Length: 113
Length: 110
Image 1 (cartoon, rainbow over the protein chains, first blue to last red):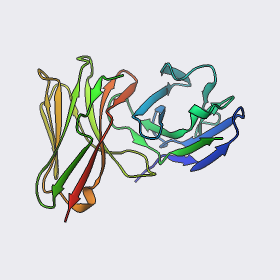
Image 2 (image 1 turned 30 degrees about the vertical axis):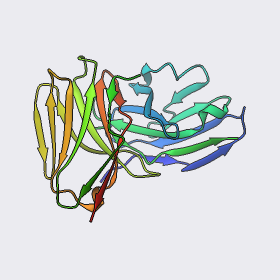
Image 3 (image 1 turned 135 degrees about the vertical axis):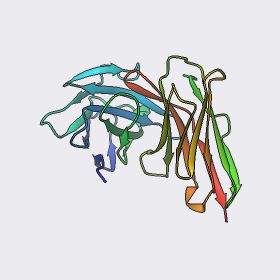
């Protein structure tokens, strides 16, 4: 079954450093997303991406965050200057359409120290 | 953001019996509802969904019921199996994003 692949599975970084989280969505999917889950909290929407541009973003997704689809297969989330409160599981997802049918990756655990 | 609520943090059920997980929402503009299952250190796995124009959708052991007037949906698992033990998230689709509930931990005892 097709799957969404995320790398790395775990990243530890120092506060203030830049991190890039990588995702390979399912190849025929057109919509791409990033979500995060802080330990003990809900899964939260960060950003959706369609047709090479952001289609919606949450208030969490401030200027420190950016997304890119650099080569037609990868979908990346960059955090420019990490803060302690950015520590969370970050999930990439993709879908063929808006609405149902999202497939999530296994997540990247980001730990900011 | 309390648009999607799962008021039961946990549920314990005997193997073979029915599990009923509940979810309430406040935004009448949601057009699609989904249930995801999640194990620790893994991403959410899609289980079943329902469009807002329907009131029931069934897939094997899983059935989702939607009561639009009450803004309530539920997931029924019959019969429950020990492998069903996981965190279950209700999610609602609005525009280009999903809004998740806090999750319910289901434990199925053998």
